[in-house]
Length: 251
Image (cartoon, rainbow, N blue to C red; front, side):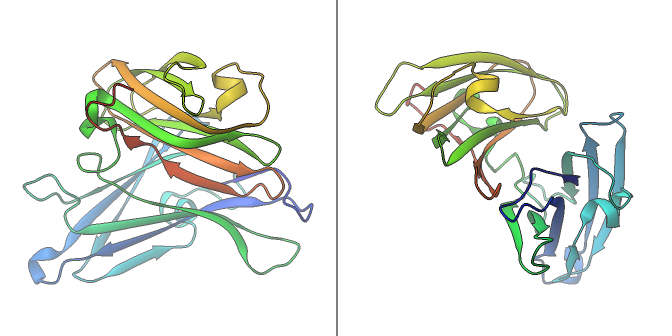
């Protein structure tokens, strides 16, 4: 929920987040209570909370979830993490609630169409998190720092404790990282920065198809990790989850 770099049209955007909650249950017993918690990163750290009731097969859509459900004022600049909890089944699953999100901005020059990037909500018990990966290791192929794209790395702690992680980058075909750095993610912390120069300290150009590995080395927290490849012309981001590393890969 913030302003950003100018679009290709030269106009200044204002980014918002859509959220759609769908109850996939079909019987009366499948009613779900959903809690949304906004963990603001750039503010006081106060957790803002809201809730929604979903009857079976119901869909709740919020065009601007921070304004409609959390109480952020129109035009207010803020960013952070939304944690969504649904009534859980005995297997600790989502409890039949599907979550879809989309960060977007309407092009002010045209007044129609929008730039956007979508992401599905995952329960960290079953989704793409260090909780169910091989030794807490997440990986992503395709990071880039070139005349066309830059790559941001985003890390978020969701388990309620801190994480110490090592971030490493591997050039294509290499088994030795070109750079590594250790980061601490505090409890429910959120971290986002440009990967190559700001995080890894690399001053190299035209890096493409780079493998990024994030490995937990300390703490009892659980982290989610994803990369945001940003088009340098349009400013349009594409968010991609880091996936759990396969067992036996070693990196």
